[in-house]
Image (cartoon, rainbow, N blue to C red):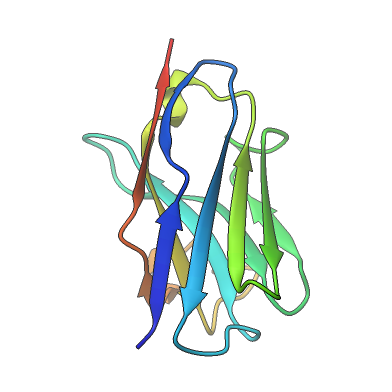
Length: 126
């Protein structure tokens, strides 16, 4: 059974940092694209960042470029999202997702993702 389990969310002040983790299990993810999405209260879920597990290529939403970094640890089967210079508008539930057939042109498309975690809450106070 495939499981994606997020952790690391919490409350942080504006300008602070958090590191989210996504522990993946249940299959080999070496051919997958792993991503983070987020959903703020009253808004639609949006793409944040993605990484190709096999190549390490990364992709970011414009809103987080230069502040967030996505990475992976092959030995631990874990994907991370390092979030720096956090802003109140980063407040959201953050979800980890895995896609077998995402491409550069579709990496931001939710329906391309096959598996999702339960989410972890991030609150940034002003």
